[in-house]
Image (cartoon, rainbow, N blue to C red; front, top):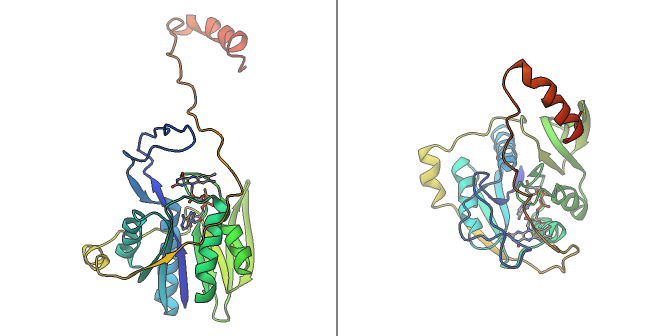
Length: 249
Ligand SMILES: Cc1cc2nc3c(=O)[nH]c(=O)nc-3n(C[C@H](O)[C@H](O)[C@H](O)COP(=O)(O)OP(=O)(O)OC[C@H]3O[C@@H](n4cnc5c(N)ncnc54)[C@H](O)[C@@H]3O)c2cc1C
């Protein structure tokens, strides 16, 4: 099987985010980057399909030269090859999907796995757009997956308050939800092998952005707490404040 996994290079959730001087972007100087956590489920799904059906798994990432370190993390998990779609100017979600589609189309994927969302810009848009551009069905937010010999597959999707079961056919794009599998930890052998695996550089064709960031700002700092008393005697005052001041009850 010709399996592709789209991976995104995102700030670590423990990183303190600082807004850049332009007020429209993140100051990247002190940011530690990780492999987008949802993409680990996508990689694991790709590796499991390769192990049961044969073929190879290629990780693809759009971004600046630093994203190569994230591609190597995918290698350490067992991914065979990497494609770095090189751009210094960041794309919006459509630009990212276009760059991925332009590169993947001619490589004729049997399946493209994505994460359900990239935890930096939280767009949830790339998988659907990419599937449309590749002319493939998209099955998103998948938490269970079974592939049959005839190329059809059954996927369970998480929907509000329940699950939905979908049947579709390869080639298709599938975006992974937490719970789809347990992503494997890289072993020492995988980490060593990751250094030697090939990464192909592909220049990204610039796509004019369709959305523009006007402003980025942090939520206002929370004010300090207030102690209204102690024990049961404080309850009436607490209830009054919640009702009259905070207006939450
Ligand atoms: C207006 C705007 C401005 C931006 N400015 C910057 C900026 O200044 N600097 C910067 O670094 N980023 C910037 N970005 C973010 C960056 O371009 C994102 O990678 C891209 O927009 C996709 O994010 P998303 O939230 O739509 O992805 P989602 O749709 O949430 O991602 C879902 C899945 O798509 C795949 N995917 C997403 N992004 C990529 C990728 N880059 N490569 C491969 N697969 C991917 C992954 O499988 C991911 O799990 C900006 C985004 C927007 C919308």
